[in-house]
Image 1 (tube, one colour):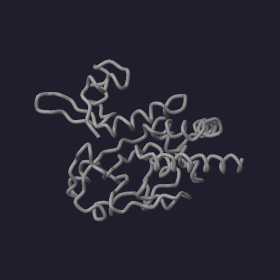
Image 2 (image 1 turned 180 degrees about the vertical axis):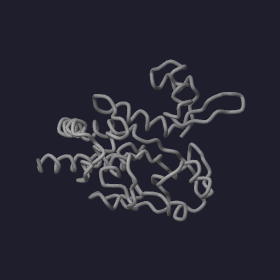
Image 3 (image 1 turned 120 degrees about the vertical axis):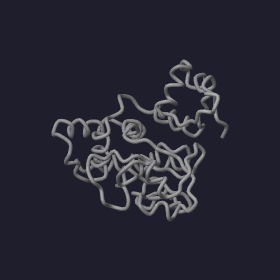
Image 4 (image 1 turned 135 degrees about the horizontal axis):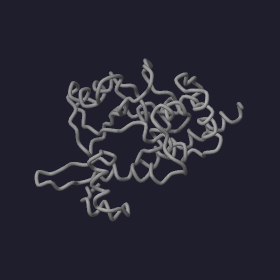
Length: 226
């Protein structure tokens, strides 16, 4: 895909050039700044931003609450939530379809794109999610082993990437998510609802559809159990 200038980004999103530049500076949309100061926005990152921004109604959830919602959908106990927040999470699940839920939890983390010389070796220390963990969901997606998609267990994404000889690039196919979980998590793969939510904001149409279907199926099972 072709990168967009700040002016082109502003026109596409229907915002001012100042707002478009702020989105790039804050890394809400991944981009790169050239030596002459010109910003270029990654087209894939723009698509992910549009997917998250256009879905559902209501505000996005803060990180701890968003993780709690995904734990609840996965049948796990989010014991870091207060009773009132847990009740609010359950109302959100009852009242929202999959697309709205995907949008609500989309700001809990940030994705960073890289190119890894050896994806299998570089992914060894990550908590798998998305396409790399597709087998935890009942979909027709096959797990992708040639690309990595996962969360760091601790520390920063940048430190992990540096220690595993990964090159940051807006067009990279290897994705590492920041770990904003309010608890330590030792498993090798994220819970099912997390995997589905990460697929649901993919720019790949097939992955996105599979993630949304899986989220809705989990929501229906959750409703039936109430």
